[in-house]
Length: 234
Image (cartoon, rainbow, N blue to C red; front, top):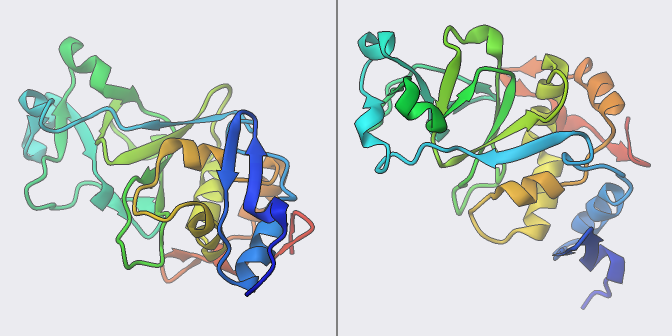
């Protein structure tokens, strides 16, 4: 039997009480280090929302192939997140790849911009609980996109969401450290927007500095190698 430090189990975040369940000394160490971060996505000026396209409700707007794109825009699914990026189009069995863009469907679309997309579901046996991918406006040929309801998307509320910020946030969320921390606060396969918003984060200055040091290794982020020390990356 291990004795746990109270503050490593119960944490208050504004009006929310977060219960963390460390099952190992490593978990306790990670919680201790994450507690040194003074920010979360909300305090950094970001907002996390759920994709507005619910397929069975929007079926009259869904398009099945690229030839329909003269009347539509890309529709992004969980399966489009591949190695930290959004890859579109790809063949997904039983899934439409686009959605109509007109006045009647505007409530289902979001304007093109830089975003970080996060899967709302993870496999029960998988070690990777958070899977994030970067979507860049420069890679979009349309003014709007559709995001399916099994995705959360992170956007900046004011100012420009830079590529450095997008890649930095996605790299953190995809890292082993953030996934280990997330497992202490979430015991199921769902990843909701509030949980993502409340994750401890370093400052944007640190995120931007760290991003410059992140490299792609076989198509995957090397962020998992980062070691936290005193709320800083070493």
